[in-house]
Each structure stands twice: as C-alpha cells, then as structure tokens.
Image (tube, rainbow, N blue to C red; front, side):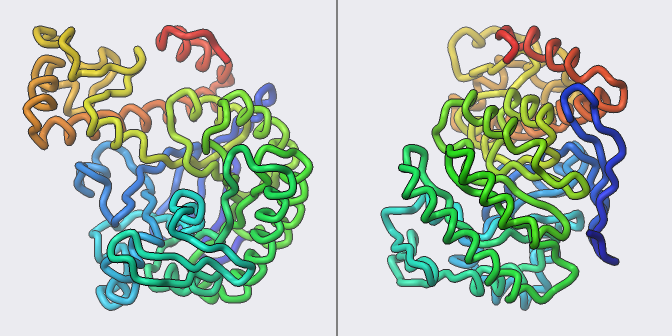
Length: 375
C-alpha cells in the first residue's frame, strides 16, 4: 500500500497493548509515530509561529478545508503556490474534508445524499459541498494528507440515524476516490458508525478497499463518555489494517492520547491545546493548571517541573497569571507554546516506551503524576 510519495514503516508493536511506533514517509518529510498534530484551522496555529512550532518538535499540522474555502478561498491559496507556501510551513500538512462542519454547524446545513447545502457562518451566502467539491478544494490546498468527505453523526443518534449517516459516508467515499487525482496527496477513508459496534464494523469493511496510505476513525470525542470511546477503540483495534497509519480524529487531551496509543492509534489532532491556553489553562505533567486563579498570584515557580520549553524555563506562574488576567497576548502565546510542547513530549515518551517495552508502566506513571486513577 505504498507509492513513490508515501510509505509507512511499522517499527515496533507492543505485544501486550498493541501500541505502535513507526515512520510515515511523505513528500514533505517523515513523521515519527505516534504523533500529535497541532491544529491550524485557518492556516495558522493560534498564537504559535511556524518557526516556533518547528523548534518545539511539531512534525505535521492540520488545517481546515471548510474554513479555508470560506476565506481566503482555496483558489487564492492555489495561486499563492499551495498551503505550504502560503503559510510558510515546509513539513507535512493534513486537511480535513469539511465533514466535521456538517456536524458542528448543523443548524446552518441541509444534508442530502448529493452533499451538504449550507449557509456561510461569515456572511450567510449559500454553498454546496459534495465529495467532488471536497476533493477539488483539497487538491487546490495541496496538503499531503487529505480526508474523504464524511457525515459525522451526533452522539445520541438512534441506530437508524447512525446507519443512514454511515451509508452516506460510504457512498461519498467512493465518489471521493473517483474524484481524487493527485498521487502526491494521500486520501484517508473515515470510519463512522456512531456508538454502534455493528455499524463501525460495517463502515470499516466498506473502507478497506479504499485504504491505500492510511485510515481514520471519526465520530468519537463528540460528547460520549470517554470509557465508551475506549470500548469502541478496543473493538476496532484488532480489525484495523496494520500496514498503514491509523488516525483518531479530534482527540488530543493527554489522557486520551495515552489511551489511544495503547489501543494502536498512530495519529491524533485536537484544538484543545491552544483553546484552553487562550482561557488561561496549562496542560502539565501534574495535571491542569489554571493560571488565572488567585492561588498563583505569588507563585514564582515554573508551570511544569518536568518541562524544559521556553515558557517553563523563563517564566513563572505568577507572571503568566498576570499576562492572562491583563489580557496580554503573550499569556496565550506562552501557554500555547507550552501546551503543544507538553503534548509532543508526551508522545515522544510513549514512542520511547514502545521501543523499550514499558508502555503500561509509562501509562501508570503518567496517571500517578496526574493524580488520577489509571483507566
């Protein structure tokens, strides 16, 4: 399942958990897995410049097809030389298909078997997304990894509702592959099926003929309890293809990264790291630290004693609290830098534990430091 542009080398699998370490070779560089991908929705990771992302170890970032289509427009980005050149990022880029917006902006959308008619959240203008349109936009963006157009069904859907969305996703996948024309872009199918194991199994089966370079798991972390997400990952793990990367979409809290890796997932993304940073929250090896709180007014210690990022080496919780409460941009920027650095370090630690044969011990130590019981 390789070509001249993409190949996946599975280097080590933990026999007890199924955790995997590998290398995904792409046109813009190698990606060491497991990997956390920072999200740059609008072709920018909020608060963190590309050179800083590279310095702290970001290997690949994610951008959003829907939002870039709305502004500045995929045609403009194509004229600029593609997304890599437009945003000055020379490492791999993954773009989602816009399918999640079918779910998250449902009040503005009308979903049919043909595609999704929607009103712009910016100016109310009318648009139609089809599988073919999603491919056209992502071709214009020039990202390395592109996603099939899917319907992400809402937590709480009935079996019949989830089955309709899963069938639609499968039909759209076939249309995406027919429209996909650039071998330098890897197209990942997406497994849907909501919380129903029979639908997840059927969705996976219908994805398999189209799995060339990777496969994604969608429709999780959409409101369901975390134990249910882990149960579904346990169900899917032995059924997933082993020779391509496995991508769990929209998941990025530290505990979910640990649990996902221990269930054979290779790639993750989430806006959490920068979103909570803008609200004054740090993700640390000792759990969340809400630096805007009064308890840190005179705390002259670093955010995280185990972190050597620029923020932790040079600033205290007291300074960061002052920045956040004063509304200074530096506060959100420093916390975003730290949060992404922390998640990268966590993933590097998990990768090392796979090679070293101590994945469960790593997870146990992680939870002890976090001050919570292991899952």
